[in-house]
Amino acid sequence: MARILVIDDEDIVREMLRELLEHEGHEVFEASDGKVGIENYKQQPADLIITDIMMPEKDGFQTIRELKATQPDVKIIALTGFGLHNLPVAYDLGADRVFEKPFIQKEFLQVIRELLEE
Image (cartoon, rainbow, N blue to C red; front, side, top):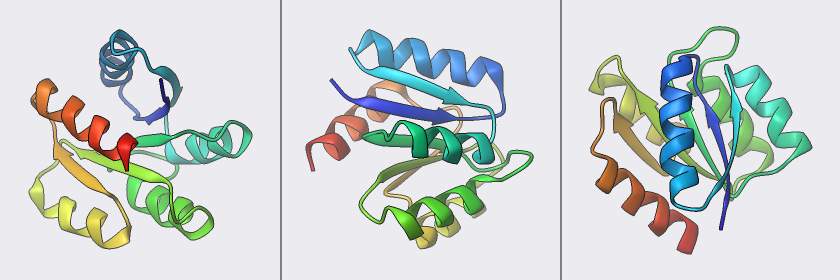
């Protein structure tokens, strides 16, 4: 299936996403912040990136901006647990889809399928 990079500073969120995505047959790579995530992406490009918005070191906004500047076709899903006001900014920076945590897993997986088929 697809190679997916999950960038989130919360271990529990990364673990949950890893289990969910691997259950669907995807290969999952993880990073605890945007700086590490971008380094990982440069070494092993992914078909899809899932990034949290609020993180230390390099937040999701900076991560999306940097990834889209160098790889404009990369598919990105942005996640936030800190309110809907962050989601339009993520869209403006290039996120393909946005979700507020917690999200409905069935809807989340459907969006992943759609993005990977594009």
